[in-house]
Amino acid sequence: MSVFPEGFLWGGALAANQSEGAFREGGKGLTTVDMIPHGEHRMAVKLGLEKRFQLRDDEFYPSHEATDFYHRYKEDIALMAEMGFKVFRTSIAWSRLF
Image 1 (cartoon, helix red, strand yellow):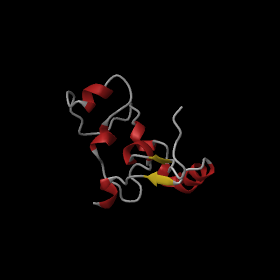
Image 2 (cartoon, helix red, strand yellow):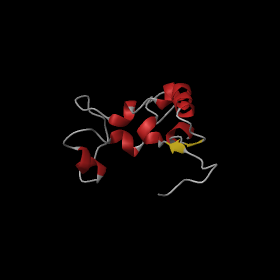
Image 3 (cartoon, rainbow, N blue to C red):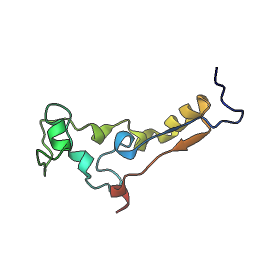
């Protein structure tokens, strides 16, 4: 049986487009992932087969809410610490910076 070495750093990682949420808060602009809806049109939009230049009111966009790390980061990081994580990697949407 394999054993992890003593001092092994257990941790986690998040990607901004899958975790941030807070769509259009804090000065965030649109990104390509913000245009990808949930449902039957998802893959066509994602692959560029269906062009989208406006959001539609009749569709749900997962990245707009995601896991709401933008608002819950303190709680989420505390949960990681509770699980014994020693390292954490995250990203920030480029559209929050530019």
